[in-house]
Length: 86
Image (cartoon, rainbow, N blue to C red; front, side):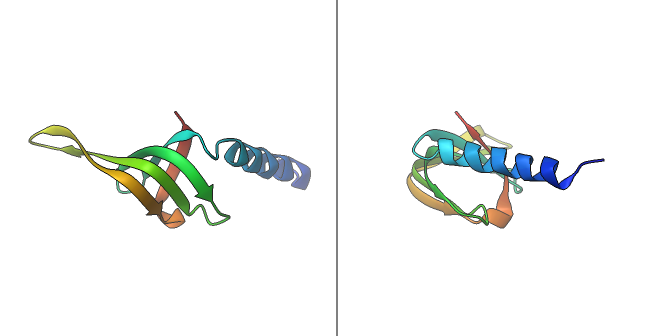
């Protein structure tokens, strides 16, 4: 059974990871299946994410992988499935 201390350490590790990747290239996957790559400019406590030089990737049944954008994007935290460093 996890303790309050265990949960506190997990939150601390997550916060440290997110702080460490600001300014670095990241992948962000949304619950819709959309994938974004770009430079992480900011992230808040609600997982709202701002990316610069972002590219949107999605799968099209006819053409395969399609990329659009190369600009700044804001992603709503409730839609974020995961974020990882490139």
